[in-house]
Image (cartoon, rainbow, N blue to C red):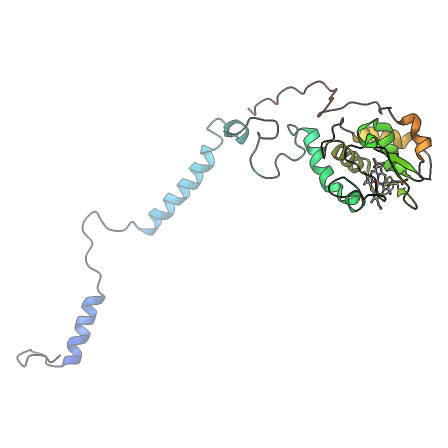
Length: 247
Ligand code: HEC
């Protein structure tokens, strides 16, 4: 672009620089539309943080237990944040045992299979087995110290070489109780919950180092280890009062 010759300063470079400087300049703010000073913005942020901290405790104690629209069933209610219900007072002990027992069953599933059907001629089934759904005392003793020799399950004979080793030494009373509760209530089985206390009771009076035989266990076939059944089928413990809503 060439400057007109009448321009007082015909130096085109100077003209460009002059225009560039004008373009860099911000347009004037209209009155009432100026940006707020930085200190005002910071002050607002500090006030908002302090006010937010005050608001929580002063609104009657907001609580997920009270405000959760889905708080109906025993497990469905309560604090929806993950990890808040595990073993909590309002969790149903039967459901908790079933969940833990399902993972504990991995120890047994290699032989008795995930289906609980066992393997024909080798591992007897747990599904619909009278050993599993019958008296709790025989079941606890079998898994505690193992079983050897010929056994009859659902009218079929099994005699696996070496039998089944006991799990008493490898598993805690609580883990064992959860697995037994699980196998008593899976694959269509239904049975009372087996508690840690029941397993401990059997452990306390069972002093042996060898596997059981079917004949030895015959007297315990229909016996149940005494003790409270906190929840699930045949629960004996008085129904826990509904958890009081958090204040
Ligand atoms: C290494 C394979 C193996 C594992 C692992 C195993 N079992 Fe067994 N289980 C057997 C065999 C074999 C028998 C039959 C024993 C016999 O023939 O004398 C048996 C028998 C049983 C019986 C009695 C018969 C029946 O089918 O109802 C129960 C109950 C039982 N097992 C439960 C369990 C539980 C619970 C676990 C896991 C904690 C488990 N078993 C792990 C092999 C196994």
